[in-house]
Length: 303
Image 1 (cartoon, rainbow, N blue to C red):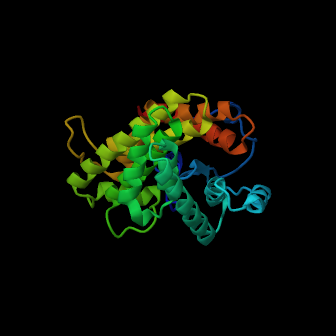
Image 2: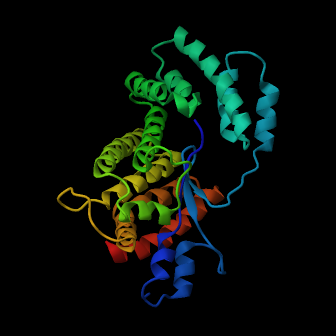
Image 3: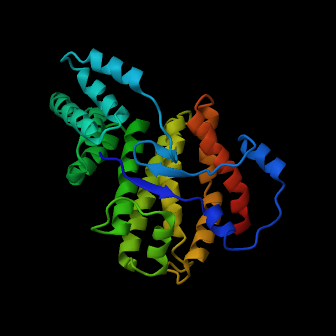
């Protein structure tokens, strides 16, 4: 599946630049977020392959890529090698080629072993996004065949949150809008209420899939990161509706404040911090958790 991003501009900067701010003890804040004392711009986005990622993040996978490419030998394990390569390649065309080669091999293996949920999931993950109906069918088949496999649940959840977002923005939208554009769509009423409700329903299922994955494997850092991804979008959609279930009529800044508070209440930040605890050697997980700690304190002001 192609990478699709929902880049989240830190709502804190949006709110702080337009409203009154309470005095902040800078030393305590620096200690809280466990980041170097200095001036920096922090941001993170959502990536359908990796969950939350740092803006501008770049990782050198050249050694692992070289080892995998050298190991390709035409045996059954090439499916897993191509699958992993598709996750590591930076170039879109290389990812597409690796996915296509892995899909051919996984499809053959699934035909020989039709009750293997992991194979159904792997095949679904390798298919191009244009094959969304088959992808969803395979991922739903995977969780039925392997209900205790957290990987199957997290991949179904990942697919569904992308589907929810695509339902929200509607046909013709290329890429993911920035947070301001996202909120503009809400505030100006560009999204029909029925489309909002459909998107929200899919997002709820995505969140439930992530919950199931975390329950099955509570020590998997990636599962918490991906649940935070799904939960964030689910929470954003929740903020659009009032208590009666109707689409609220409020301006963009009010929506942002509500989203910000709800993210804290929904324990999105706690999931990011848990991911960092489970992966203490990962700079990415630690930095994202640092941002989350800062935002969780600020977010409580809006709950």
